[in-house]
Amino acid sequence: MPFRELGLNDHILSAIRDAGYTEPTPIQSAAIPEVLTGKDIIGIAQTGTGKTAAFTLPILNMLAAAKPAPQRRTSALILAPTRELVVQIEENVRRYGKNLPIQIALVYGGVGERPQMAALRDGADIIIATPGRLLDLMGRGCANFSELRFLILDEADRMLDMGFLPDIRRVVKALPRTRQTLLFSATLSPDIEKITREFQESPKVVQVGKRSNPAETVEQCVYEVPHPGKQNLLLHLLRDPAMQMVLIFTRTKHGADRVARRLEQSGITTATLHANRSQNQRIRALRDFKAGTVRVLVATDIAARGIDVEGISHVVNFDFPPHPEDYVHRIGRTGRAKAVGDAISFVTSEDRAPLRSLEKFIGRGIPRKHAPITMSASEEPKGPRPSRPVHHEPVAAKSPSKGIRRFFGR
Image (cartoon, rainbow, N blue to C red; front, side, top):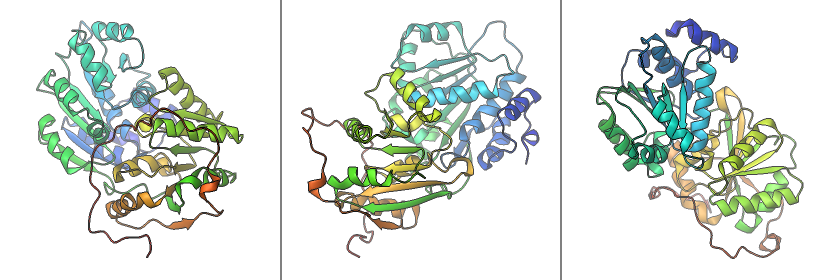
């Protein structure tokens, strides 16, 4: 089905063609016609399948069809969990709305407040925001949502995991009750499905693929390795020229810095992305990674939510994720839009329970590989350990599934 059959206007179709897209993805084909009917939508699809365009295109279409008001008011509010994702959504909105007189404002932390306050007061057709900063500015009387027509919650599961639910509730309470609410996510837990009853009216569920499965185009494998051998294993794997554009996940900010330092010392161009980096540093890291200036980007889960980079060849879970949903989101950064990719996970003895939970979650086993080189504690990188304590990125407290057969030792 071509885009022209989805009911989009000529200005948007022209922008889509200029962006190089010819056919919609399955989630776009399923969701766009439903959104255009004015229904509340719960959209579920794997990461990298085009969910952003699935809500961006119909919202732009309906805003373009609306009669211009004498004074500009905010018509659409898009909430996202991280600064990077806010910026990524804005890029999509500007790309598809370039032929429309649409004004956009961004609201997120880590940068000066005054330009954001001015944009909210002056009015913008679309506001894209993180919940915390938006709520702060709303408390100062900067925003006017009296004529809001659309509320979009993107990456809803991550916003819940990050503890944004109280902020979202307070934001929604200040919005008009008559509105169209769209909720999109790669994974949607039963808890979030219950919460949608607070925000939506008889929502239509649009689901593409199984909600718990990673993209089929991603080849997955697990390396069993003792913790001290991870760095050497990583360096060994990176000798493969096929690992051209590599995204590495660590559990902590300081862990990301340690991995990046070791790679740089070995002559591998590397950037880092985590909450301790300034906004300018985070923007530069993503820009250099996209441009190929750096081969490897080391990131934590929270900071990486906005990574939408084409051409990532490999995702490496240097630290195995504690929750299955995190794994699905991580490896979804490769194999995007029907491209192929590889996901490699390092698993230590401490990761047995999370690995078993993951395999139950996705409904299949992950192939195991043994480290191609000998890994021992004596191979741990030398040098002073950091004196400051390691602070973990916040994660939602979940209990691993029980009753799953053990893998290790079988």
